Image (cartoon, rainbow, N blue to C red; front, side, top):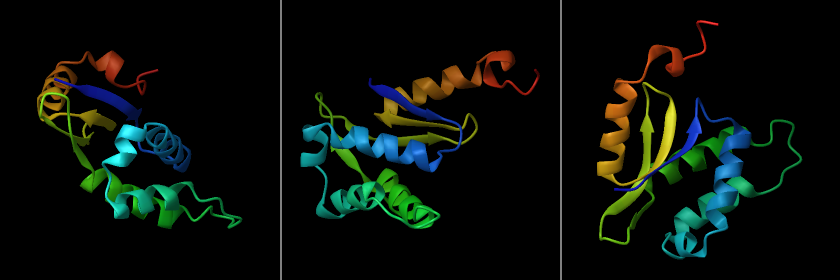
Length: 118
């Protein structure tokens, strides 16, 4: 079982660029990406002078990447991105890890689940 929380809450453009940059730091991840997935990363990280930083375009590439990227883990399991819509968290891992984290999230104490009460 493998699961890594990448982000909590809706991803900002800064979050997207930070995660994409971290993915690029790991040659083993980039080496198993398709050419299209590598192009998505390049587009996300490409500098721009546009006032909106090409946010819509970068978000489209991001959504494509997190929807389609998969790789085989050390024990043959499929690793991919998972999004827990209820908890608004983004993860990378295997199905077993995501199922476990979802169960933990369901049982999470309401005070730790949201700061809206403060």
